[in-house]
Image 1 (cartoon, rainbow, N blue to C red):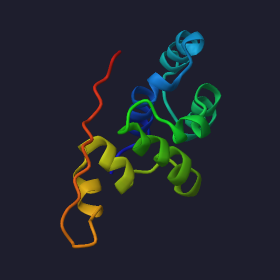
Image 2 (image 1 turned 90 degrees about the vertical axis):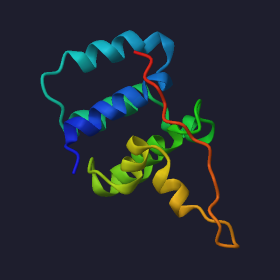
Image 3 (image 1 turned 45 degrees about the vertical axis):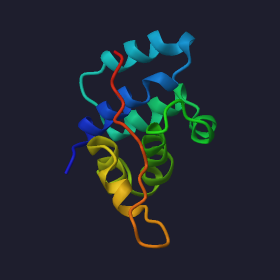
Length: 119
């Protein structure tokens, strides 16, 4: 099971492209100035810099919708805990392809590649 600090780091790196350019320096500085990362910090930090409603409709990268959905759907319900949705973001698209099936029970392929960090 992933720890809260690990989940917050994945969110930080994965959502970096969704921070407006004028706020990126503040985003990096505030995140790096912390000694420890808690759920309370994350619930306050990410919504201040990222407009999840806007990006959920039109993400920059298809693969990022997994992380955005994790934040919008699972975090309010269960908090910053590891889930299948979060794990699917880390592992690639194995779980997603397993769950998506055509009506004739053949696997539907969804061409998502794991995003590379640009930091």
